[in-house]
Amino acid sequence: MHGNVKAQYEHVSMDLYIGEDGVCIDGMKSSNQGKGECQAMIVLLREDFQGKDLSASPPLSPAAKHIFDKMGVIYAKEKESVLE
Image (cartoon, rainbow, N blue to C red; front, side):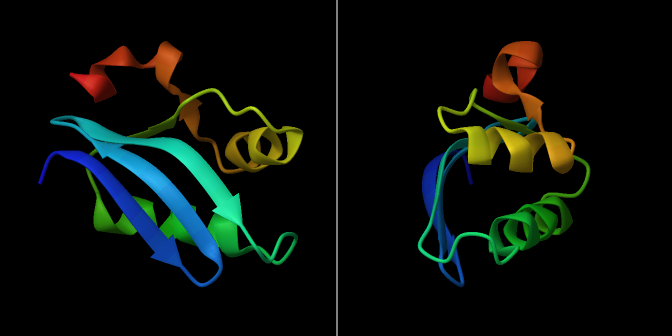
């Protein structure tokens, strides 16, 4: 499976791009902020795509940046091979 995918977990929705070498989070929204559901979804993505890189487009919100930094998600511009 390659290309754009919309994924959901609990109250979180993510726009993902699945490439040959990895997965990139292009957008993330939660209707239940502050409950750890975004972090849980990132853990599930890592489990589902073991052996592939997980990156994210640079986030627009400080909350998303905090989550990505806390979870060790690299930004797509730092790891362009994910999008190849």
